Structures are given as structure tokens and as C-alpha cells.
Image 1 (cartoon, helix red, strand yellow):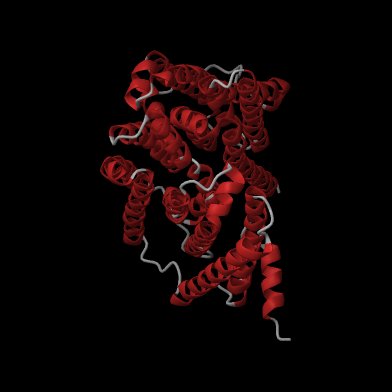
Image 2 (cartoon, one colour; image 1 turned 180 degrees about the vertical axis):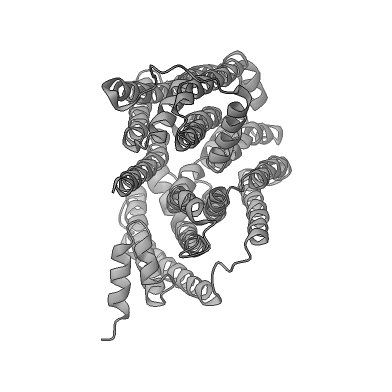
Length: 536
């Protein structure tokens, strides 16, 4: 009875953590829209140049190390070796603290050098402002890791939402004040960096409060057991990187863009002001892709423990059906999100970002939704089965390819070259990962009829939405102002496209009713599919 209760409690907490992660990802994508509207493309360029530095360090430390510490503590608890836990926490805190201080010094002391390398020395104050957030990471990682190891996921889930909510509020409110009073875009960017610091500080304060109320217990009266330091440090490093690498991929691509696009555009003959604006327009694609991969991100969070639990089972339900279903769902909604966005992108571009500038570039950028959805899914399945070293190497190869291709394509094709470079690099990562997966499990992810069903649904969606958009633009909403017209067309076209796509995949039973029931929020789709296909 106790084990059943513990499992129910754990699953409830894990579900809460997943919901919190979805909210955080949505907030992370959505706040960039009003932020860009406040500061324009040049201000957006300034923020996006610096954001990857902060995002990479905080993702690795507060997420990756928290997962790693949780795993190590859980393993020691499973062997009834509770006396070692205080010492492990102490080792983790010191190790993460050393890494955080090194990264802080790198960003703070090296701000001028990094800004100069990016081609814009005025970015140095932003790097310094953002560097302070790194100093909060040891406490945040240790608190999150301890709570997760104890099976208390709720405080961690609440903390994640609080961090992001405070961050977004400070960024938008602070930016509005700066823009209203001085319109100094670099000051606005610094304010956005301080927003990140405020968000993480809020997370630390909240988790510390919960701990002091007795929901956490970082100390014990028992004597600390001697624990070898190196194995703990090694496990923390390897597990933290493997746990966060798929989340880091998108940020590493952005970091490559920060060092290459603006510099190359200026060297190609563009004025600095124009190059800033072009990079800012290119960066509009980041939140669009983030929104497009929300489903794949959610599935990747859910599949890791599922695969890990079932991977070695020989009897009963193995991991293979879950792997197949996860791949098919990621493929289905990755294709739908990418193609649906591409068809209406000029209108979505104006609706969200005020102009239709470089809509073709953003269409090319949006194709990354497909590759990212599949990569996140494959990486999660490999991670769940304990195979992370080779896939991590694949991801690093992808980052190198992105760097190489940016240098080759941006000088010739401008920002559309950077979008093409991203797609080629992600396609290479996917193909390597797919081959590696097949080498380990020679399973078929989907049947020919599945791909045929997705192809028909996608084609019908594109044809119908394209026709509707043309009629809506030329006739139905021609009298509206340009941006209002884009709002109406975007919302109605997305609704129409989603309806057509879901109707066709439901009618063709691309995903079975029993499979829908296994997915988050899939019960309604299963009920609708049964109703649609019942004999009338």
C-alpha cells in the first residue's frame, strides 16, 4: 500500500513538473513578442545577442545539475545509505559553486572581450548585468535536486513558474520604463538581464522558504559519512550535461548566431544599424520555433522515465510501443506546426512583430520545428535507455556544422543563409541520431499508411489554408488596417488549418484511440475519433 501511495505521489509530482515546464516554455516564448514590440528589431537584436550566454549557464546548472544531484541522492537512498547524503550535498554545492564562480568571472571580467568578438562593444554592460544570475545557481540547483530526490516535485514546479513569471514581469515592466524615459536600447537590454537575476532570486527565496518550513531537510544530526569526491563530481558532470544537452542545443545555435551573423553582415557591406535590425528580424524566428516544439518538448520530458523503467523488461509491455507512439506524435505535430506556420507566416509576422519583413527567412527558419521535434524525441528515448555519450557528440557536431555553415552562407545569402544553415545542421544531427537509434533497436517507428495519412492531411491543410488566406486578404478583410487584418487572418487561418489537419488524421486513424488515451490531454481526441468513425 505504501509503495502504491509513493508511486501515485511521485507520478502526481512528475505530472506537475511537466505542466510547470510547459508553462515556463510558453512564457519564455511569448514574452519576447511584447518585448520586441517595445524595443523594435534593434533592441531585440541587443537582447538576443546576450541571452544565450545566460540561458546556457542557467539551464546547465539549475536544471542539469538539479537532475544529476537528484539521481545520485536517489541511488544512495535506494541502498539505505542515508548517512552519505549530507556529504554528497556538500560536495555538489562546492562543485557547482566553483563552476558558477568560474563562469561568473568569465562573463564579468571577459565582458569587453566577448562583446568585441561579437562586433558590438556596447553589449559588455549587458553581459556583466546577466553574469550575476550565475552566482545564484549553486543554491538553486542543490535545493531543486534535494526536493526532487525526496519525491517532492511540487515545490520545484512552483519555483520554476515563479522564476519565469518574475523574470517576465521585471523584463517587460523595466523595459517599458527605460524605453519611456530614455529610449536607450542598451539600458533596456541590461534591464532585461536584471530581470533574469530577479527571477532566479525569487526561485531561491521560495525554495528556501519551503525548506525552512520543514518540507526539505538538508541537514542531519547523524555523523557525515566519508564519500569519495571524484566519483560524485564525475557523475554530476556527466549526468548534468546529458540531462540538459537537448535543451542546450537550441541555445548553442543561438550562441553561434550571436558570434557570426552580425559580424558577417557588417563585413559583407551592411551598415551597423541595418545589420542590427536584420539580426533582430532573424531572431523573431526563435519564439516561433519554441512555440512549435512545445508538444515535442512535453513528450520528451514524459518519455525519459517511461523508457528507463521499461527498457529492460522482457515480459509485459516493453518500452518499444511507447517509443513508436512518441516518435509518431512528435512527427505528426512537428510537421503540422511547421507547415501551418509557414503558410500563414507573413500575417503571423505582422501580427506579432508589427511588420512582414523577411517573412521568407522566417519560413525557412520555421522548418527547424520539424527537425527539433524529432531530435528532442530521439534524444529523450536514448537518454531514457542510458545511451547519452554518442548522441551528445552528435549534438556538438551539429553546433560545429552550424558555425561552419553560417560562415559560408551568411556572407552570400544574408540572414536566410543562417536559417538554411540551421536546417542543414539539424538535419545532419537527426540523421546521425536516427541511424544510431536504429543500430541499437531495429524497430519500425511507423507504417507506410501513417506517413501517407500525414502527407494527405498536410497537403489538404496547406491547400485549404492557402486558398482561404488569398480570399481573406483580397476580399473578406481588405477594408481592415494592415495589422488588424493580419491578426484576423492569422487566428482564423490557424484555426481552419488545425481543424482540417485533425479531422483528416482522426478520420484516417493515424493515431489509434487507445494511443490517444496514453497522451496528455488525449482523451478528448480519442472520444472525437471514435465518434467520427462510428457507423452512422
